[in-house]
Image 1 (cartoon, rainbow, N blue to C red):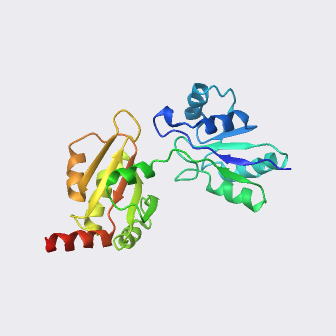
Image 2 (cartoon, one colour; image 1 turned 135 degrees about the vertical axis):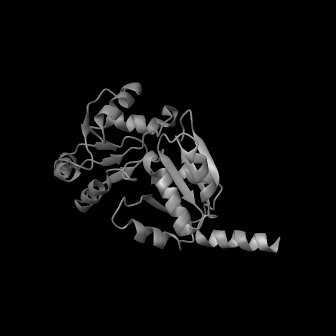
Image 3 (cartoon, rainbow, N blue to C red; image 1 turned 90 degrees about the vertical axis):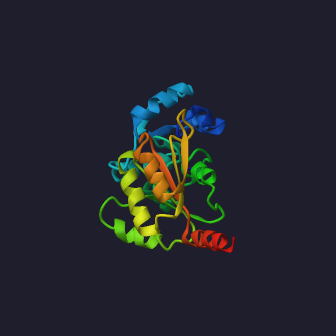
Length: 236
């Protein structure tokens, strides 16, 4: 009988968010794969997981997958972790999962930390229907994607880096309208966690005069929600 691939979420900041189950799976796994072993080593040590982690990232994922499948066919259990959060969510893992399933081998994803869920719930924007876009293309296809998102009726969730945040907010204001409601969260679960809410222009103005540090999650109201707010305002 073959082994199983486990996708194990790790904390996005606060180590108390590691689950008991995640620790157990990592301790029992025959092989641990990590996006960056330099990042995972302190985490494993903190939870008393005395095992070496092997590097598995976007640059070696295709090459390493065949060997991982061989391990699984030999009956070994493999655990995959990313630097933070749930593997395969804007992190390496999707290709490996797909290839493992193609080989009729089992995959199990543990529930756990991921940045966009608390950011969405904290935003105050509708949570009943939303679309997660991850990172926008940096160059090719960026404007095309923005034009499509401008007509999106669901709440839009994206990840962004500190050095591109202001440019992205400016583009959102250009394509979505300056008064579109949004929320930007940074350093989630960490000491300096912060969520800023308001119009796109207001949020951009805030971050022009404040710290740009950490990973950012942007939530933007959908087009339909903006119409509802406008109708409600006009009615009042």
